[in-house]
Length: 423
Image (cartoon, rainbow, N blue to C red; front, side, top):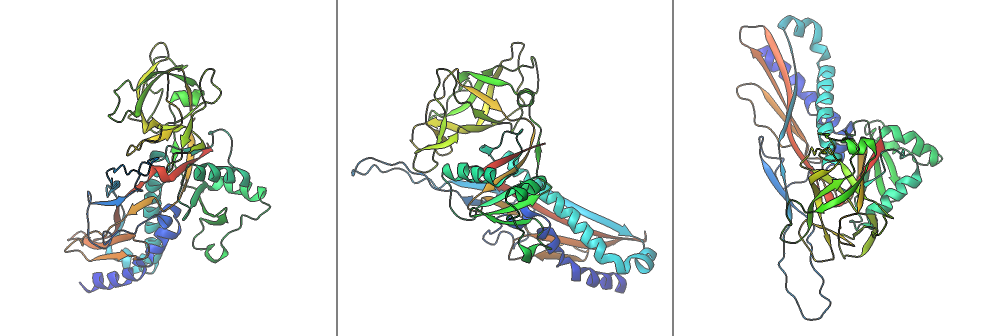
């Protein structure tokens, strides 16, 4: 038993420092909100859930006579529903003569691979949990002016004015740097470790990533079709009267089973004959914003029929004209009516802008794997943790090492906006 114990002591010296690789090479992990009350410090397992609160919303009364309304404490659950591991094994002679002095590099490589997979999964929130967006999926985002425009739309909707972060494709950085005459400089103090940090622009911190998720659009988006609304709430109107489903005509591909896909993003079109231009109202206050009304498709895929019609398409968020608060609905300046038109984004790569730390990541500690020697490393500053287990297969001359973790993530949709980069 002396050899396994000695090996474990050697391994734990870099297992703790391995957390740095997990964070520093991954901007989404490194910047996510992981501050939960004791949740990450305790040993949890798949299915564990923690709740966090959302911004309360109230109605304004144009009178000194009080109109009492219920105080709705809005909350969003975060469930640990992801798991992953990286493992490798050697026989006794390999450990003694070949890899003993090389274990640090093996451990670093394993943690970097594990961290990349977690990062890819967390980055999917750019696609799944955003309904507003900047960019058309065709025009590159490659200048300061475009970043400034994106921030204007983001803030004009009504956002918290702190902890603003932007996540952009690394392929866009050269053009942005060039457009700013090299003023988009690196944070030199963190350049080597946190290579994803770019600097600050317009009161926002900017990060680059080569792991931004790709959304493959339905054929309506790929073909550039303009759809016309043919029915409002065909699946039935909610009690508050908000709009949660629409039907369309205008798909160019007939009898197409993939006309619209889940997480496709769409925007109401301006200057449609006989129709007003559609704009979001600000999230708080209910003033008309500059933001065109946008939404994402949920519950897909949706097929077109032989005439190019697409029926019963569910959308998020619910849309509601006026300023009477509904818990999850977004205010718009006009009623949605038959004859209005939308366009859907083509396939694209998605980054995002957030404010107020709305990207939540939970990586709680895993329980020890008795009887195998186990090391759990938890970083109180960032809330991330990984587990390392060492063991042998009895009588098989096999010694294995496992790095693993569990995690869950979510993003508050109203506090975020996708940045759309062409493929």
